[in-house]
Amino acid sequence: MARQFTESKIVIASHNAGKVSEIADLLEPLGVSVISAGEAGLPEPEETGKTFIENAELKAKAAASVSGLPALADDSGLSVSALGGAPGIYSARWAGENKDFESAMKRVADALLMSGQYDKTAHFHCALSLCWPDGALETFEGVLAGELIWPAKGDRGFGYDPMFVPNGYTQSFGEMDPNKKHAMSHRSIAFQKLLSTCFQK
Ligand code: IMP
Image 1 (tube, rainbow, N blue to C red):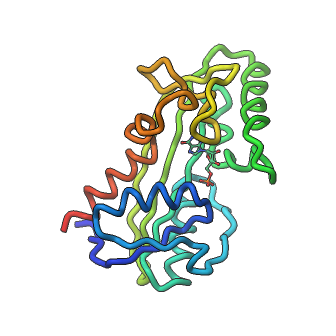
Image 2: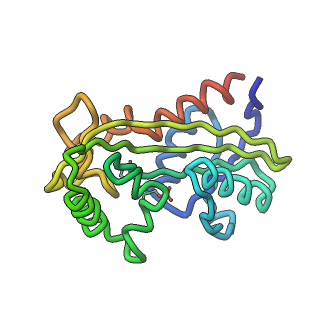
């Protein structure tokens, strides 16, 4: 049986305000109070892992051991089939220090063109890790498959959303109602697994 979450407080091991509020919304109905890594004064660990899971786990472990509270961390990104899975765990880093996703999307589109392949398939990937201060760890993954479009469309969402159309839809995540995106996203798939495994009590 997986470790059950019975505490009333959790740290979200992220310095990204958007991610913290998205996760806080998901946890609110469970009566769990949330503090962010920033509020807990936690440093941002270097993402030295080679996979989404390794990065999510190292962030969750670092936050739990420094704060003394259970900590939840996610690591996510876009993996493009014709680029051997790039940008993958480097998705945020492709946008540079200025977090310029216009140029990150252009870099993906250019790399796809240079690859000479017609395969536009890609997926968003999310690894979500919950770590307790005693070191117990539970990790879940969510994957959402789709196709890339260029030029990108829409100004909703964030990151690579405007160039990603999920399978079975015609709108990009940049055009779609955010609630519709949140109901199907890689993050929500991983989160539902976390809830059904660690929040059964
Ligand atoms: P992380 O904060 O290191 O996990 O970086 C995740 C990066 O992956 C983000 O900065 C985005 O570039 C990309 N990403 C992850 N999830 C999404 C999404 O739902 N839409 C668009 N881009 C995403």
